[in-house]
Amino acid sequence: MCRAGRDPDFETGDGADTNAMFTALLEDSAEELYESAPCGYLSTLMDGTIARINSTLLGWLGLTSEAVVGRMRFADLLTVGGKLYHETHFAPLLGMQGEISGIALELKTAADARLPVLVSSVVKHGDEGEPLLIRTTVFDASDRRAYEEELLSRSQEAEQARQDAEEARRQAEADRARLTDALTVLQQALLPPSLPTVPGLDAASYYHTASVDQLGGDFYDLFPLSGTRCAFFLGDVSGKGPRAAAVTSLTRYTLRAAALHDPEPATALATLNAVLHERYTHSGDPRYCTAIFGILDIDTESGHTTVRLASGGHPSALVLRADGHTDFLPTPGGMLVGALPDASFTTATATLTPGDNLLLYTDGLTEARTGPDRTALYGDDALRTFAASHAGASCDQVITALSSLLDSFGDGLDDDTALLVLGAPATRPHPRPTTKNP
Image 1 (cartoon, rainbow, N blue to C red):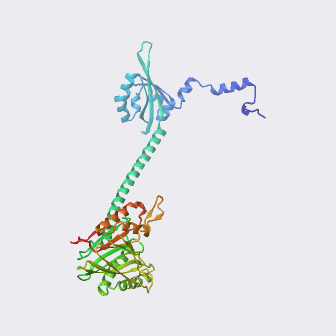
Image 2: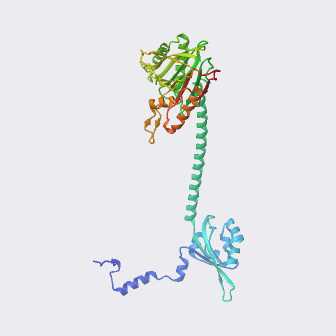
Image 3: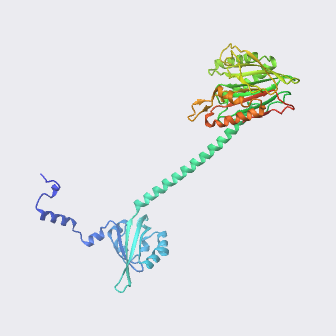
């Protein structure tokens, strides 16, 4: 049994025997250390002629001592590029400094292969300071060269990957810009380019796009039916994207055609309900919308405008009176348009006197998220209070105030919003109706 801290291999004798064994293991002659060193050694005369070279370096080069000593110079062991560097940099620096270390060179082996090495040389001087010979140490740098080449390769791959990613990013941005432009054009095609000028009527509109990457489903329109009568509608199609845009287009043209055939608001919505239900019920992708449709009869003599409108599941319109009184115009009985085969719609009536406005909007406005944590909805009461503060203003002024309100919601406004304000002008001449589209 061995004692703690002792190697059992040496438990065969006393301490003197152990020391003798260690000494025997470490006994190497200076000649053996030189010849079998893990690095190359050579000594050259001042002109570079090799005077001595160890076995290690000869083995690396595949040469014999007889072929090298006294027959070759150190520069003869180098590649063409190494020779050029030796003549222009290595030898002059060694002559000036007396020593040089860690220089990367390449040796040429007997098999015409390249051996990357690190070379250090020092000039040995005589008693009177004269240079006698040059002692050089050579380290095999093959592993280091392979590591550096691997690093370079990885660096180049990383740079290429970065360039590819940058190109992909630029391409994605270009594609996004083209998509945005296309969606903007399509979105504008679903809205009237401008509102018509109707004698005795003030009008303004605005469309807020929540995302430039998706087509919205909100819509509105205003168009004349006769000299003193015009029709209007505003609504919101379920969903977003191309399919919602197709429903929006169908809805707009259906309501326009229905108004020309029978301008009764409840009848127009019933016609739209039948078209949407028949078109989409059996498609596996049911579609519906909310909508308000109305007729304006304008009395240019008195400045009064009679409004008859019906709603299909849409938020009620707001009436902004010139005297500051503001309230919702009830439209009872309205159902989602297109959801059921038989839907009931009721027509409500109101009169706008000079200075009064009618505000129609989609639910992106009242469902905007507010508050520090963006969890509270803006709501109907807040909208009524806000609208009341702009009662008596022109339609353009009301739209400007509402567009600023929408901007104030920031990222709390995540749905498209359509606004349409119709009014009986308080003064003449009538201002030209305007529209603000995306």
